[in-house]
Length: 112
Length: 113
Image 1 (cartoon, chains in turn red, yellow):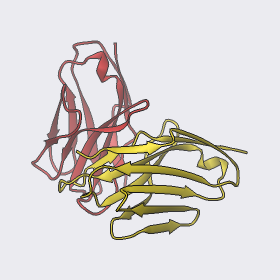
Image 2 (image 1 turned 60 degrees about the horizontal axis):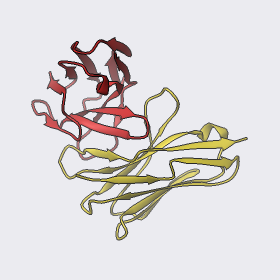
Image 3 (image 1 turned 135 degrees about the vertical axis):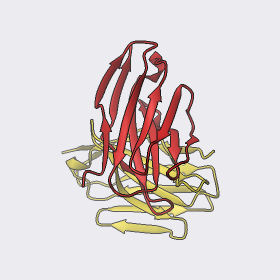
């Protein structure tokens, strides 16, 4: 039982490059989330997926897209990376309306 | 959407003393309030949570209190130990069915041996 697995753990991009962050959970959770964490700003929701087949914008969705590939997997795509997207990205999952999140180990992304 | 404020941003206590972190929220419809601990370079981990139909919850040295009228909730850690040193985040649920959480900006707790 791995919980929530994120890849990659580290990534450096040049401005304008694209990339996809992968997330998979093996807890049969319905809901999945992408957050970014910046110093002094806590965790801010980018996108979420309440259930397989649905996605919705969170607090800071601009510059990102997501795909809920199946119940297990939820990916985050940066189409044209900008230095403002330098951050630590966390994927999380939860059983809807039941309890707290289980977080992945994070992806540290630097855009130069 | 929900707005969660957390204070203080940093807190230093002597080992064995108590630590209190406070949060306020804006949306009276919020009904779930978890607390997360994040050690340096690690993922946030749930340490305790409380629902709106309960005023207080304890788990060994950790307790959380909720005042729905005033829209604030607090984390209390007693008999602090060096391993309690970490960043603590409070959160409050949003209104959507997806159990969205809105996080405070975090409190860096340092326990001095």
